[in-house]
Length: 388
Image 1 (cartoon, rainbow, N blue to C red):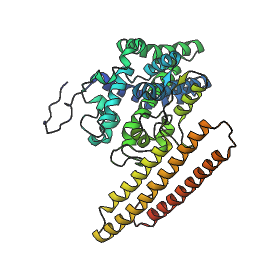
Image 2: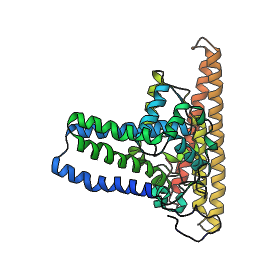
Image 3: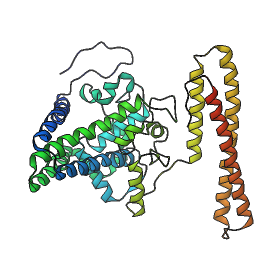
Image 4: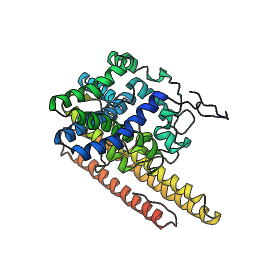
């Protein structure tokens, strides 16, 4: 059904009701919020149903985050055929389309973020970015941006026979397990419908919540933000500001306390030879991006301040930022020097090597001192800022 609308400059795609998607998403949602509670109230929950839900939610969720997203859409690492197959199988079970289509739309999201060509553009509203783009827009998918995936025969088989893959992995497998265990209805309601709804909206939160709420830690010019709660729900995908700034990194959460099971799974698989060539951005590039974002955050807040205060603060900001950049560059240079010497000198206790290590530590301490002064400067400003 085509719904007419007024065409405007830089308009959205035509408004269009995708009845297949509307019925599917409305049906699974209503069964999850009405049917599942009624079933649990009348029958209770048995350990089998909890285990089935946990296993399938984890398997399908990780297949999306590790497989669809970090492996296929961004090629942040390479994987053994076993990992590729499991990613495709359980990814299909998530009912989020084939990886060929998913990756194409996701690459467009990164390339055109916050513009009319962004498939789930947050500027068209929270609901639109969350699910409206799936229900009420007709998107033309340009598969030229996934030519690399086209070379994989298994990927193309999943794309061409997606319904077969999805129904087998998402419906037939859990129903067979449920029938064998004597809990067929529970397997359907909790292991199939409830799990599909849970994984769907966890994924959709990344497109909506992480482009609306949270902190622009690494880039204040795009809507992507870091949100710890979404990270908990989506195996680490909530650190979205970092991901948009460094999409080629296999990690999303880069700090030791960041909840990122997808990163840990990729790393553990590498230890047993199932993944390789894990891409990581230099910590100095990450720090540099973070400092730029902090500086630009101050500048954006200062735009609303009186001219005299703004001019004085901007000058002070510039001086302190240059000190930070210099200290960071000095630290990075000494690390490179030490790394080069370490690879050349076989005797690790060599005085030259120890001297280089001492310079690294001194440069690091100097940077940390300057950064503390930078944070103190931001803390003393009468602005709603928080650097951490």
